[in-house]
Image (tube, rainbow, N blue to C red; front, top):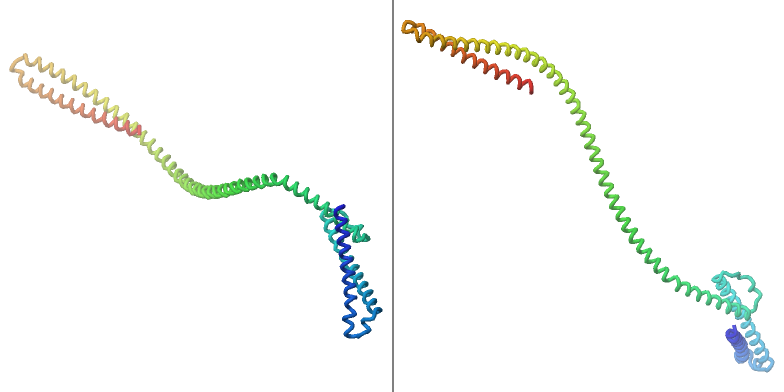
Length: 289
């Protein structure tokens, strides 16, 4: 404020001198301008003094006008400065231009201090802001990666959903086929039951046939044993008859023929036994199947 007071007074003094000097100069030159219209009356001392007084009044009015304009401008500047500082604007309406200049100077100093503190605060928070910006960019990149992963997961989910729908369709088709196969299985089961009844009946018939065949085999075996015994008896008789002589040749020949017939019967019986045995084995195999 000590440095601003001389500048303020110098500015107002220059403004005062300029306005009043300009008014006096205009008043001094006005008689010469009026000489073309008034003639010698414009050069008399009284008219000259009146013109100088009028020029002084004009300079004073101009100075007063500039003071009022300056006061209004200073008030507007104070309003803007107080708006920056957040202070009340009231209380400056009755002040003079000098007081307004002092107030503007003080307010400008406050604003300068505020801006200095603001610059210091900005310089202090600039590294933090830079770190925050880096973190924001990093988080933005991670968010972009997460978004891409979410899009990929969405595509995978859509693919899985389509596959699930396809599987559901196949399951429904399989279900319908299973129902058809179940109906066929029921029909096949009924047919198998009928076949089982027929096989059971055939098995009973086969068992009866087997028992009959067993009885026949036993009879054939008994006949074979008797034929074998007869053959042994006949051979013994033939051996005994060989010692009798030529008288019994015919009888011997007959006995030999009987023995050969018995052997043929034995072979036929054995062949019959083999056939019956083969038939029995085949029937057993069919029963097992």
